[in-house]
Image 1 (spheres, rainbow, N blue to C red):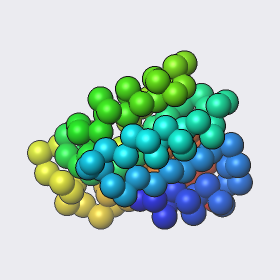
Image 2: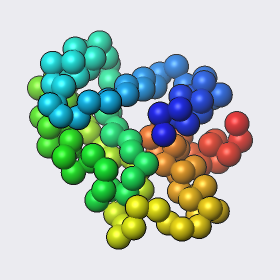
Image 3: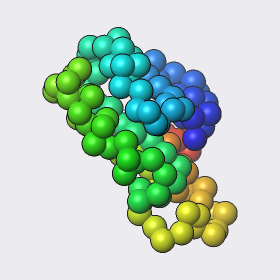
Image 4: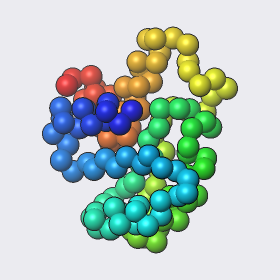
Length: 120
């Protein structure tokens, strides 16, 4: 999903949106994340984006750690999840539904409307 986010950010010229890719989840890279977060003192929100449904993937593991780190570095900044809703299956099974979900996921993560997502 990183490349989809990067491509859409470039297409729309969203210079106010930073994308940070976390590739190592364990051990939790707290020092590196603190360093990265400190580079954005004017940040208004941090969103964790993942392609997997909310109850799968890294969100359930990373959420409490991320909330704590963000709160320590940027106390007034909210942490949000951007991704698919919880599901019993890792994939929806329909290419058209997957495309709609992916469009919504990208829009949510970048803070744009789905109409903007489809325009570019």
